[in-house]
Each structure stands twice: as structure tokens, then as C-alpha cells.
Image 1: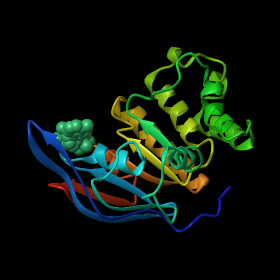
Image 2: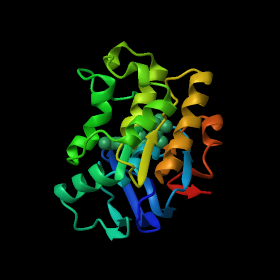
Image 3: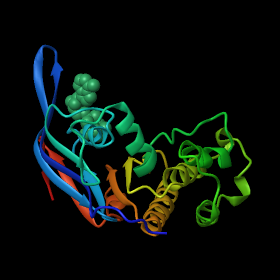
Length: 226
Ligand SMILES: Nc1ncnc2c1ncn2[C@@H]1O[C@H](COP(=O)(O)OP(=O)(O)OP(=O)(O)O)[C@@H](O)[C@H]1O
């Protein structure tokens, strides 16, 4: 199930980002240098407002850095326009958020099928494997809004990994779950990402969730400490 790809999935060199705050410039990320390699798993922790979501947004192309270089899958993103970013996201990126962000008019199966359909692909054995491992086979035809939080997060994981992306960005994936459901989701996330050959960068405030990742980055005052 592994796919061939450059060994460095994400590489940031001297990346800085700030925001105008009441007429003043507030620097959030300061000259960051970091890399994530194939199948690595990284927990990103740090105080509220330290820039964790901003960093994820830059890596996903949802926001742009003010300065520095971002390479994804060995390619410089400097000249990427909307079409290159969408191609990267469709083929190589999965995302899981605290709020699940599923497509509510659709049932479970169609939510999982959605990222594949954007690539012109259909349902396959890997999708069946995801449903089975996540324990959501029996829920396939249910509307996602009828599911519990833990069940919705399992569907979100299946959707994020359906196309076996090189990188999964997860922002507080256990933030809306109780302790037991949170641990179950983390175990499944790590196991299935490993099966897919997917690297993970996960923002979390939870020490328990962070312990499931092999690396830990702490972001504070614009800098990452590992
Ligand atoms: N679009 C924006 N415009 C102005 N300021 C912003 C914008 N996005 C983020 N910020 C500011 O940048 C800082 C970092 O925000 P960010 O959401 O990345 O932090 P975080 O570490 O993810 O926080 P939390 O743990 O609370 O989710 C905050 O001070 C925030 O107010």
C-alpha cells in the first residue's frame, strides 16, 4: 500500500509569518527551519496563540508565509498558484479537524468517496480496509449527522486517508472527544497512517495524544523546540 515519493515531505527554511494587530505587527513564526520525512509522526504543542494552526495552514497552502521557503514533496511552492496547490491537496494531503468537518448532506460512504472522486478514482479494497479497521462498516449508509462525535471522527480519518496521502495535517483531532474515544481515535489514526505510508503533523493540547507521535515540536515565541 506504500507509494513512492521523495523522502522529505515537508521542508521549511527561514519561514516567518506575522499579522497586523491593532496597527502593530505581531510576529507569530520567526525564521522556522524544519522537516518532516516519509511516515514520520510529529506532535505540535505550544501555548494558545503561539501559531500552531498558522503553521499548519501555511503547510496546507491555506495561508502564505511572509518570508522563507516551503518545499513539499521536494518541490518549491514559491511559484505555485491555485491549481498547483489544489493538485497537491487532492493527491498528497489529508486533513482532520477538531470539528470533523464532514459533508453533512452525504452519508458515510459518500464522505469517504469524495476525495477519491476528485481524483477520478472509485471505491477500492483500501476503503473497505479503512471501514473495517475503524469499525464503521455497519454505518456506511447512515447520514453523518446521525453519528456520535467519536464515530464522526472515525469517518473523518477514513476520508483523510482514503487516497493514501503523503501527509496528514490534524488540528486537535481529539479535542471534541472524551478520554476513551480520544485514545481510540489516536490508536486508529497512527495505525492507519502507518499502513498508508502517511506522515502526520498533529496540533494538540493533549499530552496523551502527543505521546502517540514519534516526534514532538513545541512552538513558543515564534520558535520550535524539539
Ligand atoms: N488571519 C489572522 N489575522 C490576524 N491575526 C491572526 C490571524 N490568524 C491568526 N492570528 C493571530 O496569530 C496568532 C497565532 O494564532 P494561531 O491560531 O495560529 O495560534 P494557535 O497556537 O493555533 O492557538 P490555539 O492553540 O488557541 O488554537 C494569534 O495571536 C492569532 O490571534
